[in-house]
Length: 230
Image 1: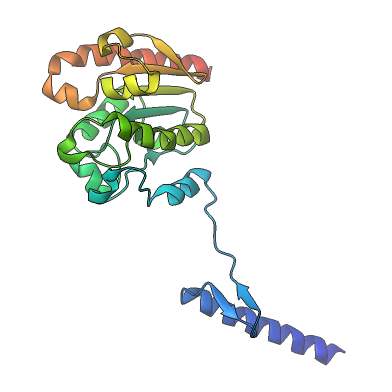
Image 2 (image 1 turned 90 degrees about the vertical axis):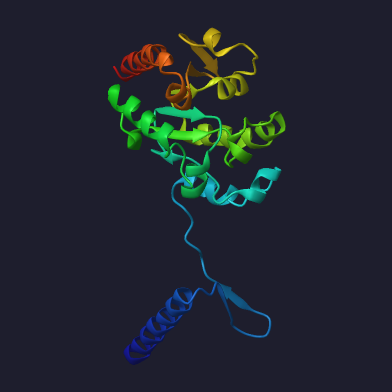
């Protein structure tokens, strides 16, 4: 009986080694007989946000996918308490597959640092996941197709605060046509989450006069964050 047990264990070890070799070769199933097969259990993402990325990374809901280099999903802490949301990726973001990595992104990093946030502890995303041609403004139909992706990200992250960067993103999320100067300086309700609107970093590069207002906005954001954390 003992010899038989040893033989069984050796056979099991060989079978496990064989299956691992097949998985390493990229095979996802092997044929056992003429009508049976064994499917390998694939490693599923542990992070639901990562799982959602894999679900939509080949999205073709609108025509923008035809010219994209990368789908620009989002970056940062998947359990962040603060999300920063812009309107759409630009050229640098499309090339790298990450939001806010160009000049505007570098300025956003400095703004975050000024209110004691690191990029790694917040989450950064856009309403659109693909770059519009020549960095034009997103079209209403593009926002309509892509906004559900952002809503799912927010649902998975469950932030305490949202900071919206720029008029277009603010109007899209708040379903309003009010100008940005009427939306700034106060918190709005977005599905039970406090939402603050400020200028887009790209606008600050073009119009430095908006920096004072942006500083006031992000200080308000930080103050509210500190209240929540107490």
